[in-house]
Length: 122
Image (cartoon, rainbow, N blue to C red; front, side, top):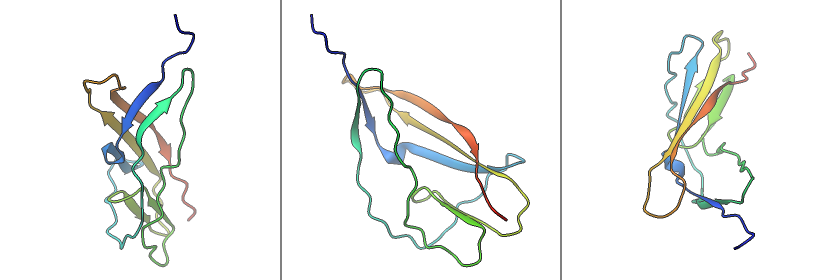
C-alpha cells in the first residue's frame, strides 16, 4: 500500500471562466470595447497535492486605458470594464467556471466565485 496521496488534476481552460459586473441594482454593466494587446500562456493541467490550495492572479494588462476614467477592470478579452468618474453606483464582480466531465480521472464541475465589491475611487 502506497503512503502517497493522489493529486487532484484540473484541466483548466481560461476561456471557460466567465465574469460579469453588476451594479447595486443587479443590472449588468456592458463590456468596454477597447484596443487590446497582450501575450498570454495556456495554463493547461493544474495539479494540486493532497490538502492544498491554488491561487493565481486573474487580472490582465492588455487593455488600452482611456483618459479621464475612474477605473478600469481588465480580466482579458472580452472581460474589460471602464468606470466613469462621478458615477455614484457600487459595482460588483461575479465569476464562475465549469469543467466538463472527461474519461480520465480529472476534476469536473462548476465553481461559483463569491461576488466582490469593486473598489472605485470617485
